[in-house]
Amino acid sequence: MDKLINDFSFGLFFWQALILVILILLLVKFAWKPIMESITAREEGIKNALLSAENAKREMENLQADNQRILNEARAERDAMLKEAREMKEKMIADSKNEAQEAGQKMIEQAKAAIESEKNAAMAELKSQVSTLSLSIAEKLLKEELSNKESQTKLVEKMLGDVKLN
Image (cartoon, rainbow, N blue to C red; front, side, top):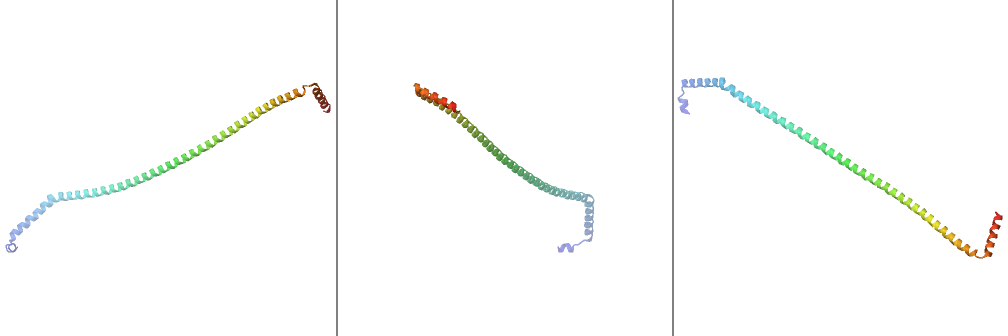
């Protein structure tokens, strides 16, 4: 370092300074503008990339919100469909129960009517048999009682006496 300070030459310093200034002027004239343009372009590219990233982030948030909304709507629709299906099932069960009760009631009424009809038929049959049997018994009794002449005469006189009383 001492040697540089001791061997200082003003001419050499002047030429070095002049070359430095010329070099700076050449760089400013020819290289500075392209370098600045590339730096500016780079800055613009970075800004655009940041804006794109921000837009992508917002778009992603919007998509997530839309997805959540669609998911909530789908869940609500599913719940509504399940509720409707349950209501339909309960209505169908209730309708089936009512139809079964009505059918059972009709069957009971038909059975009662059939029983009543059979009862009436049996009663008519019984009456018919009783009357036939009664006539048969009465016929046998009358034959036996009227087998002799004396009982026939008494019966005729009694009947004639009844006719006079009326």
